[in-house]
Image (cartoon, rainbow, N blue to C red; front, side):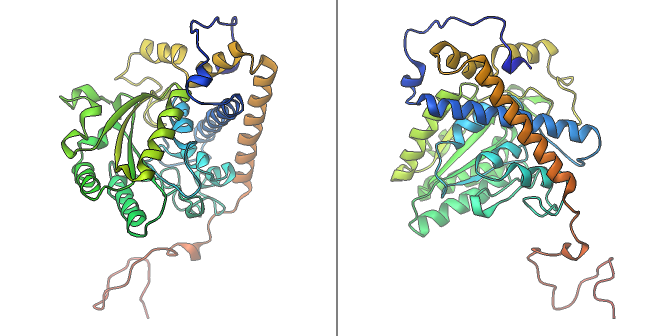
Length: 358
C-alpha cells in the first residue's frame, strides 16, 4: 500500500524540528501514526465487508480524513464528550470504543456498540462519552449544545467537540445552536470536517462566504487548520480545548481535510462531481499517513521495518474485528423496543405489528 511503501527517502526542506515545533514527542507521534494506520485498515475492511454484503444500509468511510480524527480527539480527556455526524466509525474508536464493538454494530449484531440496532450512522457508547453517530444533517449540533449546557450547569470540567460536514452550516439548527452557545458561553468546540463537498455538491456552489466566517455573526472565535497535517491539528486542538475548558466560551474550527472515497458506498470513488485527477492528486500529495511517515523517517524516529510492523498490527486488529462481528449473534427480537423512550398516549395508538391486541 502507498502509505507504507516509499520510492526513496525524502529530504526535509524544513530547518526546524516539526515535532518540537508542535510540542509533540516522538513517542506521541508514533502513537498517532499507529492510530491512523488502524483507522485506514479498519475502514478498508468495512469497505470490503460492505462489498460482499456483510454490511448493509448507509455506510460512509473516513478514508483520507484520519489526520483530522487523530489530531482533534487525541488531545481530549476521558471525561470530554464527542458527538458526530454519520462518518463516525473511526472517531468512535479514537474516543475509546473497541474496534470489535464498532464493527459488530456495522454488521448489525448484538455485540455492537448500539446493540446492532444503530448500524453505521448511529454508533454510541456512553461509557467513553461518544454520543453518536447522527443521520440528520446538522441535527447533532443542538444536541451537543445541550451537553455543553449540562457541563456548565453542573460546574463540570469537561468540553464537548461536535463534528459536522460542510452542508450542516447552512442548516437553521446550526445557527440557533451557535447563538445559544455564544450567549451562554458554553464549553463547546464546533468542528466542520471541511472536505470541500456536501455529498456531491462543492461548498463553493452553496455559499458566498467562506467556512471560517460562518460563526462570526454569533461572536464565536473561528480558526482554520490543515487536517491532513496531524501534528498541526493536534497542537491546534490541544490549545483550543484548554482555552474552552478554562472558561473561554465556544469555538468554531474549519478543519480542512479530504475524503479519498465517495460520499458513501453508493458513490463511486471520485463521483461525477470530482475530477479523478483531483482525487489522485490529493491521495498522492495530501495523505495524512504519508505526511507523518515522512517526518518520522527523516527524523530517524521510525524505519521501514517499524512501519510495516505497525501496519501488520492494524490489519490484524481489523481482521479480528470482522471475525468478531461475523461470530456475534443477531439482536434478539425481544430487544426491538428496548431503549425506546416513549409512552403510549392515554387514548391509545394504532400499531400494525399486533401490539395492544387482546
